[in-house]
Length: 320
Image 1 (cartoon, rainbow, N blue to C red):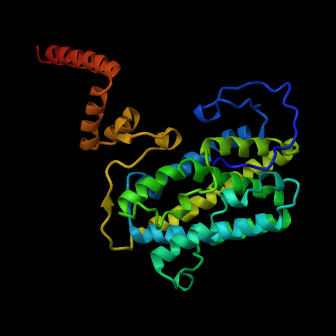
Image 2 (cartoon, one colour):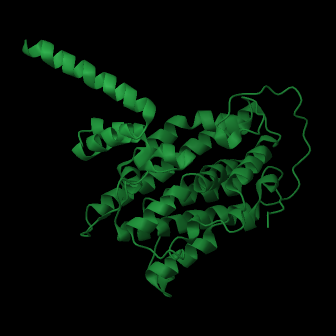
Image 3 (cartoon, rainbow, N blue to C red):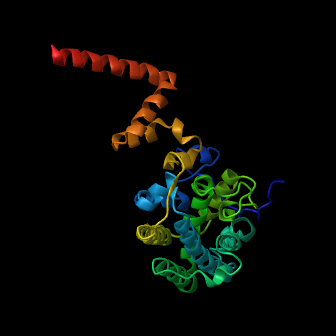
């Protein structure tokens, strides 16, 4: 049964310019000055930096140490506990109420279930707030107390990411760590209260865009979202350094997934871009994968044949 969300605030959308949208947004009419568009554009560089952290790249390739996954889950527990505590305190705030979806989004209880799976019933006594996570948690409490509108940035950065790329991370972790197909250890990624991720993300962006914010406040939210990406990178870096000290065999789960797949879904082995990127890195396995990938696509077969003919011609000329 599809979810019934709170009614969307009344708004006048007349006069908005239609802009190009990705597949998830094909039913939306947005303005470049909408908060969702400002966030998407204003956080591109921070998003790319976070995506290219070694820890994230290893994760996407399915090279995950179980202990690091457990520590990462603990870090998320502290982050979401802080964020959802502050959201609850400010749920009646005029800028928070429209995006208040505790049943659909809140992750604290799901993370608690995952931690119990990994650590046992005594999990609360086995985890602690790490040095790399503390600044993130402290900042969330600070804005919740002093400037609640900035919680919009933290909520957007985490929840929208969880509903997008997080679903691919779930598949990677399940395969790499050999977790049960029934979902134990991965409750964080399961949004039982949301029937359609695409529909909910559209609703959430719409609610954000209806907030009555001036340009200066929107800019501050974008800046806070960039800071949120920075805090996430601090957590990733800490986990990466910790991983160097952990003697644990990594289970290679194949080629993993790329950022492009996060956005669109599908099989990474069918992605020519990813194979090409890895082949250029000097990995012969991925060079072979690129050739095989191209051969599966008729248009690419023509290009590959032309390229091979040119190469043969060049070789013949070189040795004449």
